[in-house]
Image: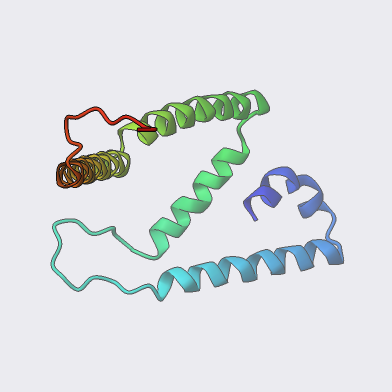
Length: 150
């Protein structure tokens, strides 16, 4: 609706055609649907220090005013905005992926799993080497050189 008012204000208000009336009715129905969705949201009954005044109407009006102002921006402004948003996303996600609590938790769990696996391997190696020594001692070949072909 806002884009229609910004870019089609001359043709829309000077020549009334069936499609322009249909477009305005469709946009009005969409807006009323959005207002209805916002209006039926549950509201807090607690006594808060700050509440938004005129709760469903003021945020809706603010949304449309901001959209109207955004539609008045020039193309170079939108390009600069897109470039700075891309730079911001790269910094935000690049830093966040390596410094997030989820990543650190994953690294800690991998480290713990590796330590447990190493401990288990060492225990198995010790037990298998002690079993080999016991077996060799019981056969009488522990520490002795065994010759083949005698």
